[in-house]
Length: 363
Image (tube, rainbow, N blue to C red):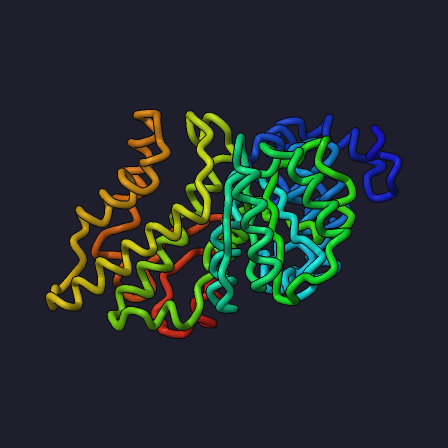
């Protein structure tokens, strides 16, 4: 009834009463925001469509709101931006720690280590817990003098030491200009407020949606990585691997329907699989093999790498099925279609290119 107060919907109670069957059919749609609205389809703006969805299917409101914002302001306002550790680092200084807030499915450790390699700076890392404060103090003393980075991981398990770190940074005078302190922690009410105010806060939440997930998975790929293996299969399999990782992460939002057990698949799983694929293809190249050994590829990805986290038999069966679906000789065909949405016609295809910008633009 509240919706009928808008001029565009004054007669909506009568419409629902007259066409109960059509409205029921629209209501039962999996994605009603994309379906035709009974009696109103030809005269609805994006905003008005969002209002209808909010009224009848509140669970789809965010999707409809994203459509409205994308139409009114542009798609860049609704698409997630992959985290750039280099940008965060460039805004920091020796007395400004970088605090990474952890969330399920995201681990910034690999991004930090890759950035350190790129900048050719040594990183001293320690996972906090009982008795690890001694090692952390030693690393801090060394890094502040020699201009290295310190990575304190899982500091929510050692909050007492963080108060000491806060006092150290606020009082220290002769710190090396290249020194940086990286801190990873789960949100905790007893995290030192002073340290939060001193530092740059970074969160790398798992992306929502396949498109955002694929963009995040492929973000760390650069041209040097693509050129690491000369065989064409490497670029195609790398894209397929990123696609599989995005699917695996996206299923978590469906709860027990996605995975019986909520696993924290993250970038380390993708990195390990990518390293295996690279080594396998280099070995192929050395032996002049005509094609990858698909049984080995599937086993290493589904049973060894991702399967190392899986504890449920049905979840393992699901992972094996994904490996069968995405890793076979067919994916090496030009423009192989990984998935097609029959409603919109949108599809994900394996790009046939050696240029990183083309591969990143394909999703």
